[in-house]
Length: 361
Image 1 (cartoon, rainbow, N blue to C red):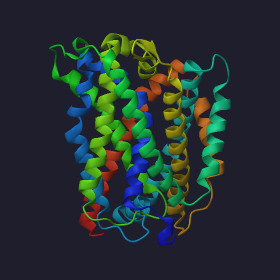
Image 2: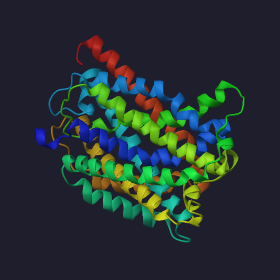
Image 3: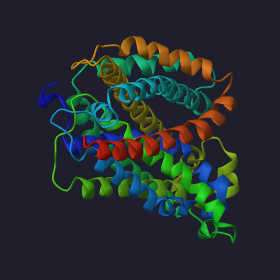
């Protein structure tokens, strides 16, 4: 890999922010509202300190990276050849399955909110093919797309949240007295979203060094948490916690009912654009990560272009993972986020400790 094939640190952060909007909108505010009720909007604040800890952990692991070195290669160096290759292989296989879940949930979301009939396989194939076309380009191109999309989607989200403000009822946001365990449970989906930031440094080509990387990372993490707070507060404030917890896509329903000067404004297309752009870009990133992980296992400098085959495997995994949308929902709301959170936490911690003991990171 040459230096020009990698990402700048700004591009990495922008790409991470855009791609994580998809699971943020999907998991919140329903999961938080179901755990703690009207206090759901506090979940991003409660998760702020552990999210900052996860961010600092990843930055510490990558602090002494070499030029052009991806996180996959750092794991090899930190854990040793055998254990590192085993970790990369297992992580690659999990991400093939996880990509299938992203494709399937995106398809089911469109079918349940926009299209009356249709097959999830069709929408999954369309998204996978579009992402595949982009994934053949340079990694730097994905970074530039992340920068452009972060600005555009940030403006759109700010506009949507501003338009939703008149519909928010303050009484819907007053948390009821209850055990602290409910708030901790509500914070877990938020942490699972921020933990996915572990995936993006796995892209081939590495990330160029920048001064004060931890401070920059914490600012982007704070921005993502702020967006999740806004989404949750707007949805729960407009619909109430009970209603939000009982709907499959409460943010979308809230958007449908936005009114300006007493006139209902149909802006569903805005939310659909958010879904499609973030899912499409996230899948394209994951396809490139496949190549890097399996190249690390094979100890190749340059990845094989395996992602066309693995994209097909992901579509198959998504179709076979659940018989219907309800089974898929339980899988994507509980099991998959928990696995992603544990992977990020355990791999970062173990790799950093072992790498420091072996003096390889």
